[in-house]
Image (cartoon, rainbow, N blue to C red; front, side, top):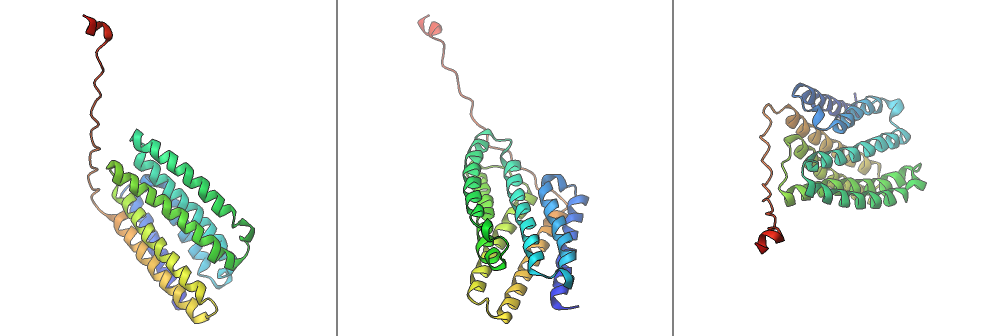
Length: 235
């Protein structure tokens, strides 16, 4: 077994451990799209580890699946966090709509090159990374601004994805300058794989945590006192 296959096998096992933790601890319903994303990681990884599927075409198909599910994860977490708070929900709707419109324009601009491996890698992927990271950042800002309670799993998903996506974007930027070197491609690929493995292990720790942290109470909103009626004033 090559180092690539061994590393990918470990990632698959770690993803299975996360799924098992979500089921055993009853956290699957906290983010259904995250469970679907992990299942896609396991399924695609089981194919990608085989030499017959270790191709540019399968890699592009796999990335499209991952990108769609990552966006779904970001949107579901945003909804879960703000749905019980009307003020935050209104703000989230406005910003999410603007962000989704902008994201659609950015992603649609790269559709004409979606069948080109280099275009997908260096043009499409940075756009997807930026859009997904912005969705997570928007949710984090709403949490901070409105002092919203947030579950441990949601915090782990948001924080883990944000850090990894920033690292992935940096690796892509460096790789673009040295893509002609097979050795550079190999080592950058290994570096990204180890970073992703660390991310999945971090999620496994959050999924298997025994006690759920108590949800902080939302800030009380003072009731507005109604002005006295004009008739009462006249009396």
